[in-house]
Structure formats: structure tokens, C-alpha cells
Image 1 (cartoon, one colour):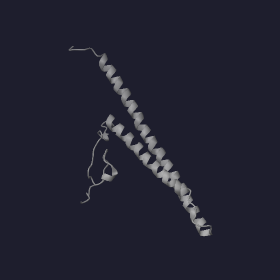
Image 2 (cartoon, one colour):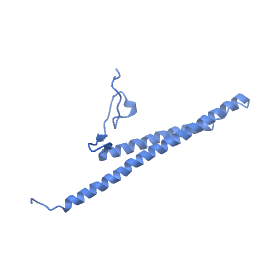
Image 3 (cartoon, rainbow, N blue to C red):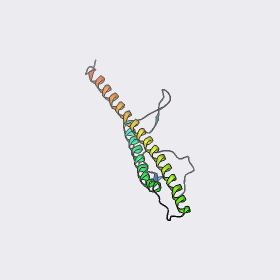
Image 4 (cartoon, rainbow, N blue to C red):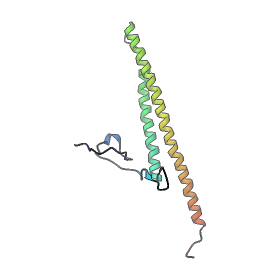
Length: 142
């Protein structure tokens, strides 16, 4: 299968293992509709749900990696000689650095997911307000 020469773009709902577009399953809303009034983006409710889920899924993947990194941080040398102990110490330092980096990534992903959940709350509040305003309008033809 030939790989496209086009610049890769993010498409919500497509898994990374489908990177070549094989069995792509779009699932979400309108990702990143440009806002005419100024800088930024606006998302529909489905997209906000999807983005929050994707950030949480990424955090879960980092957590699984973190479990593996703990093994590196607790590595033991195969013997009692200097080279084995030194190698184990370096491996432990690498495992600790990896664990720290993964913890930072987990926190970032969870914070991003929380931002989308917060936006969903604001979306729901605005939706409720608009419904209330519409329901207060006189019924029928004026």
C-alpha cells in the first residue's frame, strides 16, 4: 500500500494503528470549526465528549507505560561486581527519569480532559439558558 504524500492531519475517531487509513472509523463531531469572530475554535458537544475521552485514553496508556517503567527503576545487577552494580544504578536512574516524565504526561492529559469536561459543563449551561429564553417567548404567530 502506498503512503500518501499529503501532510498528516488529525482525524477524531481514527486509532493510531489505523494511521494508513485502513479501517478508519470516524466517530466524532466537527473537530475545530474555525470561529469567524476571532482567534480560536468552537466545538460541538460530540467533539467535546470525544476529545475528553481521547485525552483520558492517552493518560491510561501512559499509566500502563508507567507500570513498566517501575521495573526499570527497581533493576538489580546480575552480579556483585562493580560493573553489574554500576549498570543497575544507571538503569535505575533511567527508570526514575522515565517514571517522572510519564507522571508529567499523565497529569497533562488528565488536565486537558478536565478542560474539555469543564467546557461541556459550560456548553450544557448555555444550552439550558437558551432553552429557558426560548420557552419564555410568546407562543404562536404575533
